[in-house]
Image (cartoon, rainbow, N blue to C red):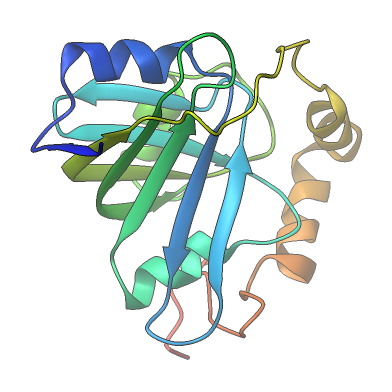
Length: 185
């Protein structure tokens, strides 16, 4: 049976912080819905209604483009180990790029990595838990180092080039503002 809460309670926070992976869902008013898995050390619960997560450079940049047009986001965690639970946090978020004043302060809450692309500062307006009884068991073996090595090999200049070539627009052609504000929405 699903239960809904107006904020992140202590047991929710403990569950979130114990997970090794979470999923992000976003969508513009039209076009494709994006659901993306996130890992590494990239999320912090900062209060009852606030979560930040750091987005690392990758093949797509959907969330940034979606939030420009529809400021809504869902985060989801699954209990793959002992405790069967699914937890979703619903809310709105703002995109902070490296050029934004608050980026450095929030980015300092995470381990240093050259591929940090954005930070999403989410205001949670509802938390929902459900049983998760059908979620299979998985053992966490460890973090992959592939993305960190890829970024280190490219360095800051190579990452910026990647943003220019691959991260300026969503798969539906929406601007992401990765290199600066855009008027083509």
